[in-house]
Image 1 (cartoon, rainbow, N blue to C red):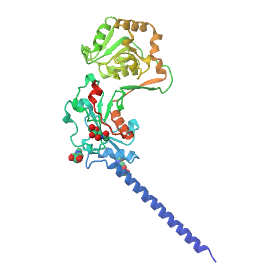
Image 2: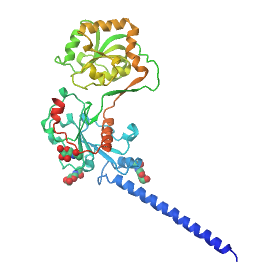
Image 3: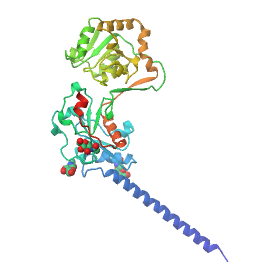
Image 4: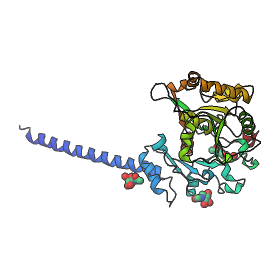
Length: 362
Ligand SMILES: *[C@@H]1O[C@H](CO)[C@@H](O)[C@H](O)[C@H]1NC(C)=O
Ligand SMILES: *[C@@H]1O[C@H](CO)[C@@H](O)[C@H](O)[C@H]1NC(C)=O
Ligand SMILES: *[C@@H]1O[C@H](CO)[C@@H](O)[C@H](O)[C@H]1NC(C)=O
């Protein structure tokens, strides 16, 4: 008996089976690809200018579900490229757009308080889908924002500088340094500087300044002093001063702005006037700044600044923290809207902000 014919039949059958297997894999993979990209693309309205960019996001995400965030009102009317969550912030699965055609498909709708402009008819008018959350965004302090009774029971989430917001974003932050080494501040040829555009005699900071300037020379710049400073000169000017007056225009818990983070970043010691020292220390190291409340009077503060001017070692004490830490400034606004998307992807709670007015303004 020869085993030859049955041997080649065996081989043939094995080959057929193998081919069927490969074909099967191919079909399965292409089906899977189709299904997942359809789920993603389901978020598209019928026709839209943004189709290209959402396709791009669909392609780069492996997620079945895409989260869509709609910027209903561009903050202060300024447009920006919002679809950078993956590329700039490593947040995947987000599609952020200003295209209102996406309203019915949006998981979150971001509304910037200032741009409601006191007129509720600027808010979306068509019925809100059940899954959709409205996000109230405001980075101005209560003193600089108009109260608007109609915004109670309307929003689902808050996005502000306050640490008790649902989504919190500071004007800057302190992070670990890349390498551990002593920080050498840039060279200085001025003692105290202040750049300010909005002057109001009623601001606490104006009164403090008017007293302080009697005791120490202060170099002033900006619209308030008819001494305009260009963007190009801003950083070199600030960094050439030993101290910078980081005086907030209004005093509220957690309201600590770029007026603090800019001098910290460039290597100038901030002298802060704003919320309490304790509150500042929630955000930055205690030896990174001087607080006006550390002194009985503007004169005492002036004396201390003059003392530091003569004592380089004491002055350098204000940079010790930079051996291990550095300042990260926050870019408005793309990171904020990506953070909204990230929040929505991680949290699925039902929530209504009943008394936004009381929370923010009282
Ligand atoms: C997304 O992938 C599809 C299918 O591979 C391709 O045709 C399309 O050009 C891609 N779009 C973008 C914007 O990358
Ligand atoms: C959203 O859906 C509603 C019906 O629920 C419809 O009246 C409205 O035109 C839709 N809006 C958009 C922008 O597609
Ligand atoms: C969002 O808030 C609105 C208005 O109060 C409410 O009707 C809706 O159920 C809330 N939605 C979610 C998903 O929390």
